[in-house]
Image (cartoon, rainbow, N blue to C red):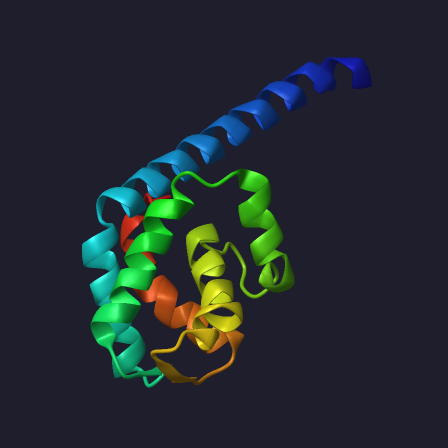
Length: 139
């Protein structure tokens, strides 16, 4: 009896993986295509929510725009490696928001135009996701 369920499970798992991969590609394409606009909106939201203190909004917007364009070409492994420390932060996370959150925590904080980054991982994630959720396909 158990042998009949295996092919179905494999097919269902494969279909879920294909759907997830398709969504991932669509989100990365949307991120790339909308990089300048999303980067400006993200910087503004980070400022409004008092997460980011910077001497140059434009410089930080450029950093995010460049990052968003680079993310579209990134290998899955590279992305997973970056988000590993915060993967369990929320249930059903937006992988793009996790990546950008970790980028802010690890890398952006070192940028010469950044005076300070405030908030814990979850606060930063929520602000990032409030912008990047716009390119996440509806369930």
